[in-house]
Image (cartoon, rainbow, N blue to C red):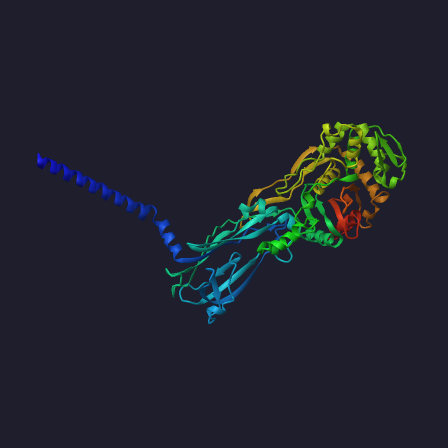
Length: 551
């Protein structure tokens, strides 16, 4: 009996030993095979000081493939001795320099690519190719946006990781496509945190034959540069849009004032950033896609609706003011225009005539045609921050006075400069609507197209005959009407000026000129003035049109 009990105990003990052995074998397999690479990496990380960074971010290009960012590379050969400073930074110090005098420290490796590193030895040569993402001739900052430096530091394991956060514009919308490839510069250290002699530096990078991708826009960099030069010279605050009515391509889109991408990229102090954001002219707001009351430019919508509806022409005698309910509306300066028809009323921008015309059309027709022209919705530009503008509903226009305000582009109506460019594009394009386009394609490193964005044509808004009549009327605005400063001896121009009350004490009115040039390839140019230096919106339109023709 005792012998049998001993045998049972031995069997149980052997079983337990076998289970323990299998458990240990399993644990070893798990640690060595399954988790081995990860644990080995952790050990290496504990014995290395690393600077992890990204570089080679994709480009934002104009329609001809030229960089809008003016990105460039500056290469410098540096002889170095690697040392560790008190903040666990890896310093590249000129050979022979005492550590306490090591002032030539590479503090920001994020835009630096290391080439030709000599592995082994305590000193060597490094070719530092510094990528300057935003050069002095960078264009369209409100379109491109910018990326901002972000830094993360860890002591266990020791590393400094530098990355970039997109802030607005195409940099933000296409961040994943343009993201740079990760790289790292590392030095091996011992348990005391000292560099191991003879090991040297190691450089690692991920290479992808197709990435990062670049964004191909519709902008023309030479025209964009011209528009920005003229805008900075003549505007304190405003926007300019140049658009091809044939396909909706945006050739130039500028907002004033702008901001310095280069300084924001590397980082500014909280005090400096506060000064920028407190600027009353809002340098970070893209005014080309922000909404403002369009003023008398909205009268083009009423004229188009009347012509398209074949509303019988009705002459009107303007006395300079018109009473609507308990409200009185005045023409500019309360000056009477006398007997006017639609053509003359548009030329002299007679408020009384167009209030009366809106009443004849009715609220439903006015709002319907405004919606057809693109008011109240975005163009889906693939650009963050685009406003849909504002178009009131029928319920928001209960009284004739509300309709009168709307007919003058005031009250609850708001539109972006881009939307007014779309309005004029319908007139220039014989009545057909085309959605404005800013991005043509996303391309890989070899220039092959990864994703294409086609021009999108919408419904016919007005007939070709209506469009021709409107163009003729808009020519008279320039020849004999309120916008004679838009007249040019060098090319045929047409358009509509506008002034809108703001309700602001510092800037009482906004000014507009939305116009087009004639010819085989007409262009639509919209100038919005929040605060001007000297020229009016119409005069600035003429300068942009003439310089565009010259180029």
